Length: 171
Image: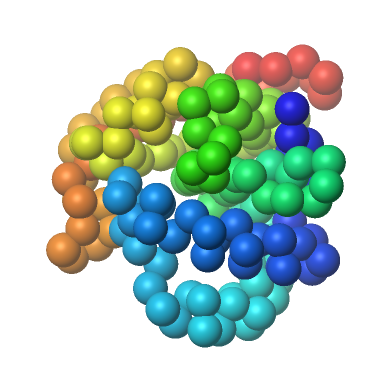
């Protein structure tokens, strides 16, 4: 099972390789990051680390023993005890239950380490795998939305309340 690691500066090369390798795969179910993301990756990585240091976001990678990134699980827009969850798993690692395991780990961290009391999430209506992960991990549908802004994809929004639990136990 890959290790869940908090984003660090030295993750940049493996993270960029993950994003490049899976770009077309991800674009089939979520809005594409665009060419600028890849052209300015180093600056974007530094900006994410600054946001994380400020407590605005919490970024995590699923990392195999050899250092290969096979997934991302992020908590963004942290405010007022809440954050938005986002996750993506490499095509070659899909179907192994990694997203469910990673989201469960993030639920625990969100409650015990980051002091959050609720998480929001969204999934494209046709992204059945992500919707299943959210349902399996206790998220409840709250409505419909357009994901990715104007011209985005029809999606479903979710929420998950978190119980404040002592460190070492989970929601």
